[in-house]
Length: 198
Image (cartoon, rainbow, N blue to C red; front, side, top):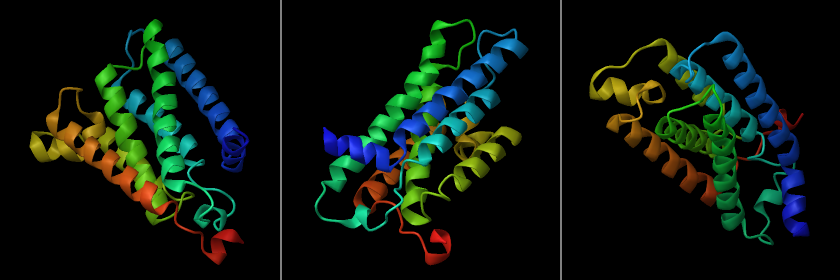
């Protein structure tokens, strides 16, 4: 248990989870105050999911790149458990609102967007580093919020903004989630360059 505690502290997990709870509370309060609808719009839902995933992204790397490469720890198990816990935590925050008068739903869209964006972020952490891994999810989500996608290709490109029953959106989300998890679990976060450390 001490090892898991040290692991969580080295990745700033308590601070990130606290920030995620605060961000979710603020998003919920703003949605409740400025909207009469029971369910928030897809754009608000997408941006809230993005916010939560971006906060969790800070935990995908540690301050010591060498520590992430030591053979003394079961990194595959730790990284996979980390991603599963992150998905579960973000979903718990979002789905808790289903018990209130201002809901972040529907359920299928929340799950799809969370696993897809976290998978994309994990892929980014393994390829460009944890500090920059949220850039692509941010850009993709903003484009999906601005441009409406129609047809199979359009729904795939704007998967975050599609209805929960969209098959192309579900396929893209699943591919991103699986690919991101496999690459991150097997490689870990990309080591920082000397300029990033300075």
